[in-house]
Image 1: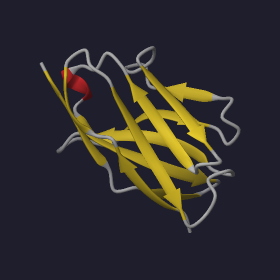
Image 2: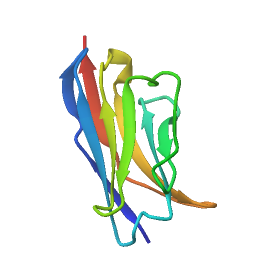
Image 3: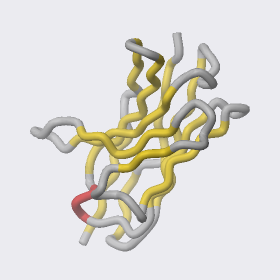
Length: 116
């Protein structure tokens, strides 16, 4: 079973950038659709971006389109989320997810805080 560990979160000023990493172990991520989601306490978890198994197709939430870039390195078994032009509304815990058909696994999340 694949296990996911996110890293790269932290405190950044509005307009700044961060790169999140999601390191997978236990199984190659090659067959999985990988995605990033985020959650603010008291709110539902929301989709941010996903990338297909080949890395050729990506999708983004409208709120991050043009600012965030998702990528994957199947050799390093890692998925990335480059976040640019960060805004206070991007403050959340960011989670990585691996999905293959109906089976999926979540990481434990990494906190991103954007100050104004």
